[in-house]
Image 1: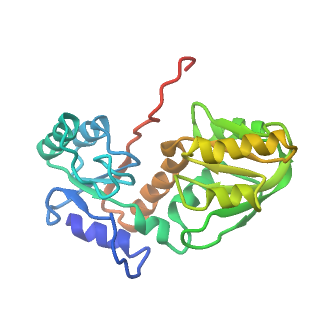
Image 2: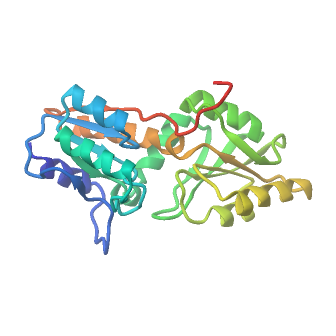
Length: 260
């Protein structure tokens, strides 16, 4: 099967009109025959090398490869070295970001929710809106952070705000979506997100706690908050194209912690 045919199948899961999308081939020939496809959250040099050694012809990544949303190759020694590595690998590199988020059920969020195993009522709120979950039993943000670390294998979840007040209203802002401040300042008592602007979101949560509000922000790290979505897509590809060998490759979290 050609790389472009696999990509077309994946994009068919979220049909629609895209005025502009970052979901394009960044390197390689779309006509290339593919028997093995690698999936990742970030196409790090280690992932590129490991996927190639496994025998992949196609590498599907969720996030940018060249430090820019549109993957403009940075005119830096690192950007040039990474471009050379990709070209030498012979891989077809495709970014799959807008389509999974635009699917009827956000595929990235779906994978994360399944991995978290939350017990409560999930409210899917449509494209570009943050999903909500009303927990069956109240949990403190500290308890939720431990649960996330256990279920998602995240090394360290950071907590801003009221860490020990039990709440039930949880907003699921995986990655770095729009609307996190609106959720934190409105419906939600606890918001999970991948990344955060500390002076806006973190300080709001801290001020809220010191003023007596049960508000908390949990920061998971970008990769930790979305990689299970890409694992979910790996499974979908296996099911849709049984003749294709598909494997998920872990990039790991970007942070290193002294205690880990």
